[in-house]
Image (cartoon, rainbow, N blue to C red; front, side, top):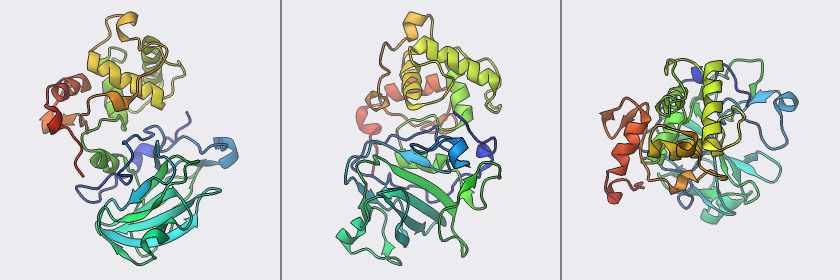
Length: 298
């Protein structure tokens, strides 16, 4: 999948220490491959000439509730988004300008919301359009000049003020693991025995070849792209440990859902305050925890 070479230079969104997952009734699942790449449905890089500037929070049914991740102020309602959906603009007290796209037009009226309203963390904002099936989430630095999201045009550097939502979303998810950053992905491939290079390097041809080897071993489509099925299969394989053979690591015809995995938290190779050499060790730590210790708290 095409990805901007600049996407990892985008500063991480800071925000508050404990933001909420913005869809409380939806099991956390997000398109880790979408930031700096990916395309909306029916939109190719050639036709749209722009990069994807956010993360897609997936698996949202019709009318799924959207809430404020932090205390803040509504900056805009029913803003133009896709055909049949609208966006909410929200400024957090911690200094982020959030874009929440894919909501039902007028759904904020259920709670009499209006622009300028102060909303507490967890306060209702709107509802998801079922046919859209997700919440598109972008983060920017808030400021006097920030009143809407920015387009990230193909041949331009990242827009001023854009923030990478990766770590922010990881804080939302809490005890669920997802491989958002290149270092985490390379470490996962190394732990499975497919990558022998520097896990601190940028994603390149060696990483793509390692990913293809992992895909072949795991029984998913070998396309060199880090998509959701590939990630689910890799997370499942990490629980089993390094591949000893194709039979050991193959997941069969269908990749397992990461929702079925025992949850854990991995942020830059640190789990529950322990510095770990690899993600496999993190999985082992998580599997030993009592279930009540790994539940996501709201």
